[in-house]
Image 1 (cartoon, rainbow, N blue to C red):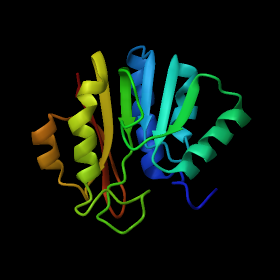
Image 2 (cartoon, one colour; image 1 turned 180 degrees about the horizontal axis):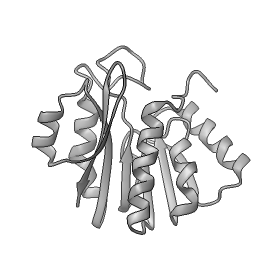
Image 3 (cartoon, rainbow, N blue to C red; image 1 turned 180 degrees about the vertical axis):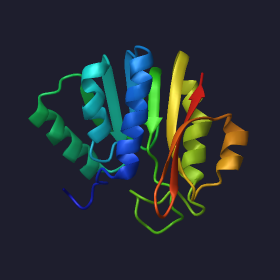
Length: 176
């Protein structure tokens, strides 16, 4: 794996599991994955949805994901470079994000801002405007985040949690 690209780890697999549960419960025509990293999640659900757009601020991540897409011969996924919604047009039935959530350390794949959640707050402030009517937004959060503040400000509903030895991961949804 390329060290400049976020590799799938417990958080990736946990979010993938939560997304697959949602997909089983209803049909999503248009899907947006924010912050694709390796592209693992988009590629693993491609056969269950109509079309996926995956974006990342890291050109190396987009390059890596695109190479994987071609190797797997997946046609309904498009990857592109974008800083959050900057180069994304339209609305989606499902938008999900495994954001960087650690306090600033200079690593874009892990750093979510000075407090570790500025990027999360920016995403949550914009995501409802990018959802189709009845659409669902999903975000992965960590016990390193101020979850009570995020739940209060953005009306989040917990889908699941995963306890690890050094943190607890949470998957939340928000509805349009």
